[in-house]
Image (cartoon, rainbow, N blue to C red; front, side):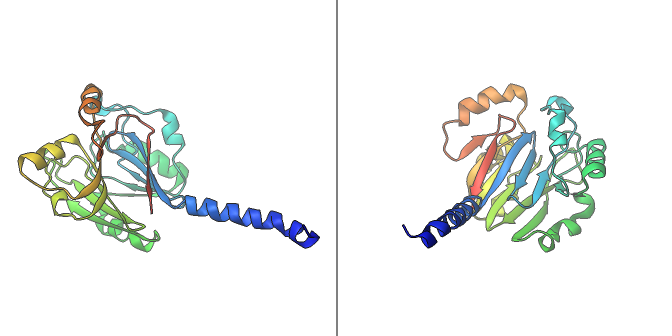
Length: 229
């Protein structure tokens, strides 16, 4: 091996490792926090959906204080509605004070839909959806790096999601699947993340759906779903 080649070899190896690592990072990671709370990131931009909420509200999932501490600086917070198992004014106020960031929901939908001007290769469409316990409930279709992610929140009907084509991951409560079946509504999604399960529902969710390839019950807090793009 000549001296020139030997000297350049470490640089070549480093460039290969760096290039390989970058290509491997081309994925959207979605962490299940609890209830309808999700943390989405492409490694550059950080988005939280329906989090922070009030831990343990309405006998739904609790979360550790460390979950609040781990929130990334300058994040985007998107809420479907303001029920306490989806939204906590106290927690979001504290987080934004300490870590900055911006919150979005029914009160600033126009600004939310303009996030495409702030986040590369990103768009979000808001749908006003029915939730009999909330007058202002929205579901969202996020298109990020050409991947379509639907976030339903607490909406009760499959009517809206049934109008959307080519969804990669649909995050929905179990009753949306029941409504779609009862009303013969076809949902065009490759994968379903079933969330907002109460603790008493988790055993039956695992039993009914664990072996179904395209239905994934979100029962383990901290679980991460990866979507390659």
